[in-house]
Length: 311
Image (cartoon, rainbow, N blue to C red; front, top):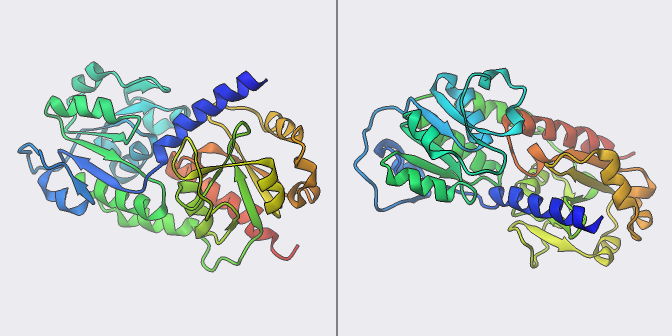
């Protein structure tokens, strides 16, 4: 049992590490957008100023944003399971599968004029692609503002209008959120990890004015933006509600709940005594994943937490 949870937790750490920062950094960006980003590689090549027309996206979020802006510009994507049943990408070549590194030969064969990757997981292949003279962009998203900034950057690169998509983002958020229940988000069992305010999940909770009891906590953790909690800390916090996150490996909700019910602290909490335990998908709450995943996470936050005030 412990070995299985250790493997799941390790894979989970690797996954959420992809969303550990809040900037958009650039390498070899076309000159017309080089000044719109926070950091720029000073060793830029002389690049054409024409609009980007052939994009390979090594992250699911970037692929989805590009497709939402102008689907004709996508020529290659990562093999993320989040696109498994998405008809928009049915005929788009996959250049990677799962946690495997992208196939550089496949990427080069697609003749892209921009390759987008996620900081951390895609850094090494992006550096190799950059050496081939292909423009690249590394992205890091862990708050709402960086999502909007990334959308604007990608829109400018492919000469598209970002405003409809930015307007859609705003529609996900409550107009005047009420203060909600005190909450803890638990993303793994061994160790018990919870997002603080410096993560995508933590920032999303802030947008909904959810009282994240781990928001201000700091400590040693394998992943930035997350802290480890002891059973004693959880009992001390005693949240009104608990959000559990299904890991990307696909454990069932029943299995996840059954494992946590074995913990000595579980029955001592207000949340469990009042049946206020909610299971969220990994994509949308922990890793943005895609626009639809974000929308579903926002809808569920509205329904499960904001809708409970005063009950």
